[in-house]
Length: 552
Image 1 (cartoon, rainbow, N blue to C red):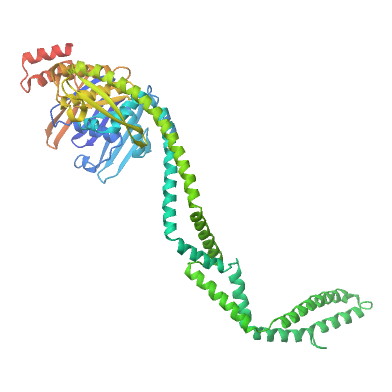
Image 2: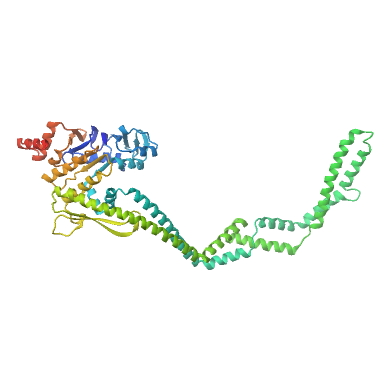
């Protein structure tokens, strides 16, 4: 729960450092005194977006920091999963804003993103302002209330796993249908392209081989002349290099007995002779093989023209890319040819997954129907003491198309008396009735959700007198069991029941308007509640009335 709040240079607040306590506390103050500023600062700690205009005029930076005691709420997993230092008895959240528009957030001095701040904030504080009454118009809020009371999180997780499988398969089916439709529109063109590539008899590496062969044929006379001359130099009668090397080796061998030093040289010449003889034979063979063949060159050029044209047409840089394009076209045509089978197979898979999804959804519906009865009974019990003795409250659950949250449409129906037909609560309840409905809902679900702190911002709108006192008693009950409830109120009946009373006020200074928040002592509480009862002029009767309220 919130233990301490520190604010510096935020809108009208120069500096505020105040402690909070468990149980039920109240905040009072005149309209415009700065209560909304306190809430705005807390909202920033919960991850709300910041505006540099909120920084106090002429200040370079504003700081908002809060200390929380989370030791009784089982939040260890958040710190472990986000690799944040954990001190559950004194968790510190800090937000800094600069006039330049920069924003930084920290949890226990560890820099965090706004998303991480929101994740923790959602588990720390629920701020109920008047606009939150509009939630009664939203189906997902009403469904969430039923789920909280049903404690069906495991069943929801099981359902959503099946639903995600179904949606994934459905997307695949939709994509297949789209692909088949597009492919069938282009089938003739695809088949023409594939036929053209298939008839080309593409072979990997062929292009390079043809280019080299064509180059050789184009220079055949030059090549043949060089080979012929080389053949004469190597193998010419009597003067060829091969014969000369052989003679030189023979001469050296003949004097080995009388001049042994030449033996290695003779051996080296012998080796050279063998190598040179092989070269000469290959050159001679090439002389015989190379011949200019115009017809063959023409065939090569025609083949190259065909391959170059295909490369340009299909935007390919190699034969390998053309082959890949051909194979891809073949695969597309195969899908078209087998599309009916593929479609039937995937449709059957989608139907099976939908059936499994509906089975899980039905189990979820059963839990929600039981929960709806509990909500109806609980809400009636809570609303009757709040001045609606003939209340009828019904949780209507009807079917809707299967969705991520199941197949149940939830609507809260309400009637304040026996003579009118029940209708959606947001359509028929007055402002005061909606306030009582929302307080009752919050009180009901607070018992099922371990939320450390709940702040009610003028939830008493439209009520007064005994009803306000009853609402305050509900908030007192909510403040038990290690929970913190804070109510911002204009009603003395509610203010008097707070165990701790804070007052927000403002004053005009030479530097401008400044807001302050203080914790009132007993005498100050009497004075504040008396002023709430009688207005600016506090009478003895008002003071006596204030003491009586506080005595309760």
